[in-house]
Image (tube, rainbow, N blue to C red; front, side, top):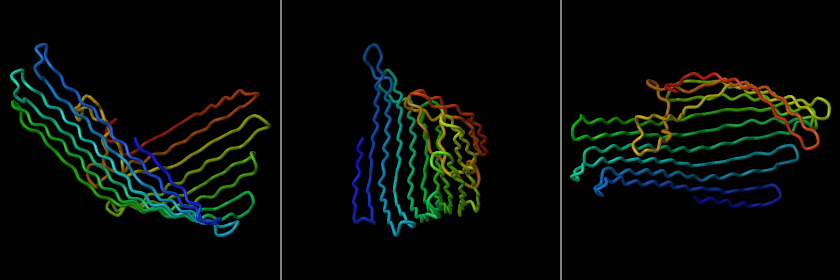
Length: 276
């Protein structure tokens, strides 16, 4: 793992940060018989990383703006080679999965009063995704498939925040997403609120609609290295739709002399699942 962040306070009004990370995961397994003859060779490789640029400008005591740009990538390569006692290769299985995401996000926030603020913004994403699987067997029919996809997403969002000390915290927001390749528009409202009763009890609740064009699946049929990894898929207009969900959470928080009790009831319904 490698992580780093650099912060520049250009001036009292300007803030700039650059952060990045890189990760590599390797797994090798050699299986041998009692006579030390090779039976199988398994290899598991994952690489992912990204870089993010963030800039904030404070225009006045009431107005500020933010701009961020990021690039991230993920690559999975798993192989499994089965070998006869005589040293001949019997079967080879390979899965390759890659994902790239480019994102640009801009927002402007306005302090409407000492207890409330409003934010408007725009987000653009560009995804590239590929999945391929190949199985070559000396005694069975070869199997192979591949899927490549590219997609963009445009999002407009607005959020209002009202807070009255630690008594009330109310945050409604609305997001509109447009997926050009799928020609689909989704409207996602989200509401978060918290209210304090007396000195020690808080009531909290949230409700929201969510949508994502990317999904991860765990398929045992694609396990070729004894490590069941998540495989990334991108929604298309035929086999896989956009994953949407509705979520509701209601709970309470109680504190007293170092004691903390946090209770939550959670409900979620999803649409677009292809398998569980």
